[in-house]
Image (cartoon, rainbow, N blue to C red; front, top):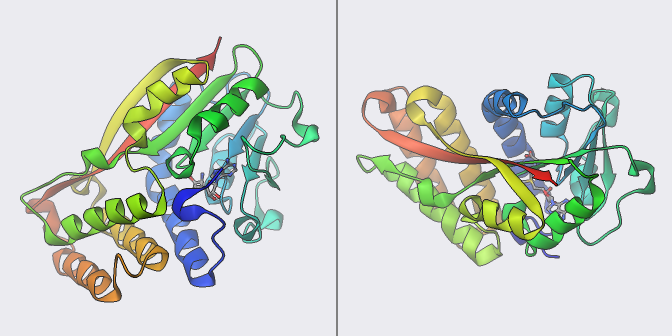
Amino acid sequence: MKLGIMDQIKDPALLNAWEAMLDLQTRLLGPGEVDWLRAKGFGRGGRGVIEPGSGDGHYGSYLAQCFPDLRIHGLEANGNLIARFDAARAPSNYSIDLCTVGSDPLPVKLSGAFDQCFLRFVLQHVSDPVDLLRAVHDALPPGGRLYIIEEDHFYFAAGPAWAPYDKATSAWSRVYQAGGSDGSVGRKLPGLVTEAGFEVTDYDIVLRNNVEMGNDFLDLFCQASRVLHHTSPELLPVTELHSIHQGFQADRDSHLARFVATYPQILLSATKS
Ligand SMILES: C[S@@+](CC[C@H](N)C(=O)[O-])C[C@H]1O[C@@H](n2cnc3c(N)ncnc32)[C@H](O)[C@@H]1O
């Protein structure tokens, strides 16, 4: 199983850029996502959750704080990201183990310890998403629940044309395509989870946007551009990175009245019948 632009990343500058990105995505997007998860029954049942693709644990720690009675078991394929997880400062109901879900067996200690699975921004990087989803399906008990949060580049849109946004989103799609990550996974989710044996219960396309997010929106796209630059400097050279950042900086505060631009989130829940 290959992990697209996140496959075995180890370059310290790239790991730093990802760490800042995962932290920002957690702080800016987490509260709205948690509202959605609560409304869709996440955490009910209380037997525990597996979180394949936990990265450095920013999001899992946040989720564990939001659901203090729930045990969340992070599972991460890349030891370089786990090394950045500060277990001593994490909530006591959260931990991360090394495991490539879909290729490796799950840790034995997790047998019977969960009835839900949470996947955020993972399937977009996985070469065989149905293999991962089938492994999750096999591991869940009947009635087990699956929650997925993803993106889809098809819904990137700005009006009128906004130069730094257009540069950032086209670099995003360029680097994903070259690196084997899938920017169109959001619209494929219902088909993928059904193929793996699940029954879809909720599917929402949420267009977060600069008007409601304010300057946080600019920060998100600036940090994404840094990650993309460190991933493929030949596809997003430093001159273009600076031009994106300078463009957003010039539009700071004034963009709200001049542009509408989207950041598309796809949210799905499903059940193992
Ligand atoms: C973009 S990060 C998302 C981290 C976290 N879920 C979040 O939302 O902040 C995706 C992570 O999934 C991991 N990953 C991808 N496929 C995996 C698999 N099959 N098993 C475990 N981890 C996986 C990658 O190594 C990477 O750390």
